[in-house]
Length: 214
Image (cartoon, rainbow, N blue to C red; front, side, top):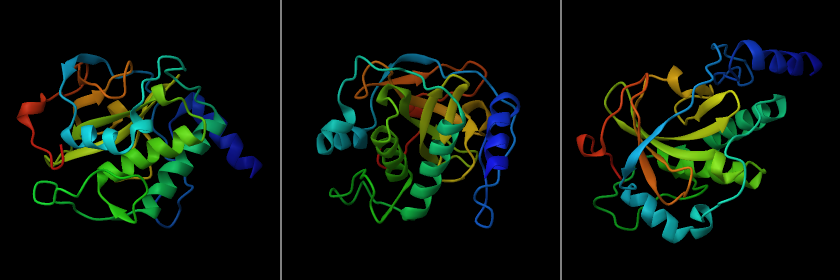
């Protein structure tokens, strides 16, 4: 156990973080630390299903004017992020939702089965419950390399913005993903969204991409 913590601390200065597969869930994946952060562009429409989500779960979208907008990336933070990412990925069975044909469908916290939206909002909920400031946690719409719309959770840290993703147990810096970044929750108000500035990465405007449930 002591050896694991020594590795975690070393990771803060030379790599980023905490990956694994089904066989070795606690294996550490080494990626160079990138201390960059996502830059918000102009305001854009919130995903429609996020508006519905805020009506269903108003506490998840309440305005938080105070509170830190970044968390210190230390060994305890790394352990918490890795645990929540892994546990939620395991707890929710993957399934497709038909938002267009089933009006009862919506983003839900901790369902038995769900899609990327449910994973992302559940992770955000669990981290807030664990004491992570809500302002440091933002949902983001991306496009995968295969052209599929996808939702992930961004954690703003002192070492850059990290991605919690149901497609992998590895926690990566946002620029280390192979995603095109479309829009992200505003740091000022969780109910509002902004475009992602294309600094150093691809960016698509919302009208160019149709995403199920958005």
